[in-house]
Length: 282
Image 1 (cartoon, rainbow, N blue to C red):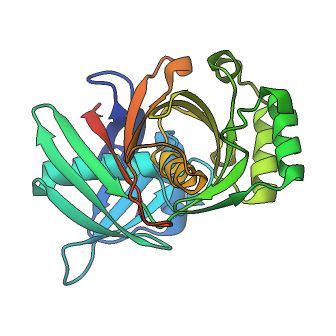
Image 2 (image 1 turned 30 degrees about the vertical axis):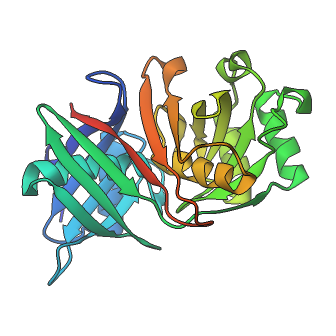
């Protein structure tokens, strides 16, 4: 089975109206293609992730796998939002169960004119303090110092389907100044099993700005990261952050691809995070 890039829908997830968002590829077919073929097509499409979905036998759900240009990843939030938009357009508005490699989640898609409002329920969340050696290596990677960190958000390992290192920064200028070497970032993420590093600055308790290097996937930075936002929201809950039940995240501004993500945070520790936004077809 040889796939063609013409079979792939191109959808920008977590858009800011009709602009911005993170492009993802979505392929929906009758049978899951071979791994090598999905990897080849994801590389050809060139987005940070492409989602491959097939309908589960005897049910309403879909089996889903995610591939970056360089490797398969267990979960991708923005590609899930893009998939929700594609499912709503092809099968109608609704909530669709998804079977991932390591979890079962849902995605909701509802058409709103040319746009689609979509929301995902993340895998369960967990977090723990980051190893000081990892923190030191990450600070060195970006050229930051411990004085640049926000003590309200101590470095942590956060999980919501994937593992992410969270680094809270003390100012917007520090977030804007983020730079690193791609291969050095890839090596660090591979060594510690990280999918992204979430760099975050809190403008207010419920309005945060983030940047997400995704070197392990061969991508310097993602303009919108649903999985990283879910992990961040779960981590803030565990910290006792005054989130008031939800946070809004602005991402991609420094790339010229402003994206908006909304995360609803339940009270139960470790419970799923609902991450919502709009999607536009490209």
